[in-house]
Structures are given as structure tokens and as C-alpha cells.
Length: 254
Image 1: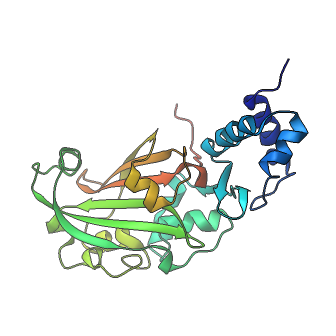
Image 2 (image 1 turned 180 degrees about the vertical axis):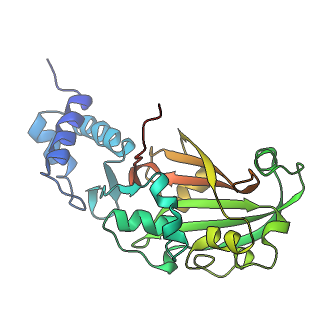
């Protein structure tokens, strides 16, 4: 039975997972792999393409096929939103970093604020009319200079006008982020709904997140409410799938 590209990919994948090729290391040249497995270079090329689509490796010009670092950041569940964190100056993405044993700094987050017409989805979440003006606060979050995700939060103007949330300066709105600002406005976050789904990225998302070919994104939709069920934020996050491990701890309901 001849060796096909899937068998070559499986052997290389196992070697990567075993640690034979650690993160940032380079796989052997394709002609060397072909000689090792007794196949032609085209078969190796297809095998490497399969690993690239899985997000395990990426081609680097003048270097070769590099094993991608895969340090999935723990994205905490309910714990990342604990009031004890943001009320004392720790925003959610920083809570994830600390739980993952990774550093963070305020400059890891860019910021762009604009007033935009509400889409049907935003309007339904915030309880406003379609095309009515809402504030959109878009952030790109990086780790060690590499993008991890984007997050765009939408707010009703009367909730955030003249607050740090609509200040376009880079970084978090305040040390405690938007939730701390909303609390000072008398709109303390009390509960939320999060929905996730995976899909392939758009070309713009691939470019902004610097994704390798074939890597999907995980899309987050989050609606945050006060204790009186007033919707105070709708957020959409686009996450590089290989950068996060989604972790939830909860009490099992009766």
C-alpha cells in the first residue's frame, strides 16, 4: 500500500504533538520529508497544506514551514466577568491573561469609537429601532504584538454619552473597562447572555487577525443587562480559533 498525503500529514502531526518539532521550529525541507517517506514532493506539499489548514504550521518566506505556537489562552466563563475584577480595575481580557499565566498591558487593546446606525441584530438586542444611532466601540486585542481577537460593543447613546466609553483614546475605557463606566452611570451589569458559533473568516477578518489559510474564527455575541433587565451592551467578538481554550465552571442546576 503506497503512502498518501494523509498518512504523511498524520505522521508529521503526531511528531508535532509529541514535541519533536516544538513551537517556532521549522519542519525539514519538503524534499527531505519526501525522501524519508518515499513519496514525491507534491505529496508532501499536500500533506503540509493539510497541516496548515489545521492551524498547526504556517509557511514563512525564506524560513520554511514553521510550527505555530499554540498557547491557547484560557478564556474564562462567568469568572472573567466577576464584579470583584472589573470594580477593582481588571478588565475581562486581562482576567483571561492572568488566569493563563500570561502578561498584559493596557496598550494591548486598540480602540475606535463611532456613532453608527443600528443593524437589525443590534436593534433587537438593545431594544431600539433599526437604523437608530448607537455607539460602536471597536477594539483589536493583541498579545505579544499578535492579534488574538476583535470586540465591538454597541450602546444606546443616552447610556454612554460624555463618558469614557465614547473616548477614542487607545486602551480600555477605564482600568475597570466599560462595565465600571456603566456602573457609575447607574447601569450596573447584573446578568448576560453569550452565544458562540464558528465559521470561516471574511478576507478583512483574516487580514486584521493575521490568520493563516484555513483557520476558522469563533464568533461571540453577548448581551449584558441590568438587574431590571435593561439591555446596556451588545457585543460581537471575532476570535482566532487557535488562540483560545474556552473554559466554563458552573454549578449544575437542579
